[in-house]
Length: 69
Image (cartoon, rainbow, N blue to C red):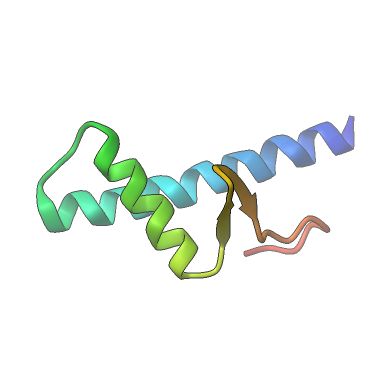
């Protein structure tokens, strides 16, 4: 049960991070909907070293042992 809750929390934190990157893009460009804000969020997260794209798959570089980010 604890492991499942930990996975949900990690997924939630990743979603919130991508949402924040997307909002930064929206604030700078005014574009709110569509594919572009999501791709900008992935690009920014990749540049910051939080994730990497490997043959179309997202590989997160995220603390899995309960450390806070």
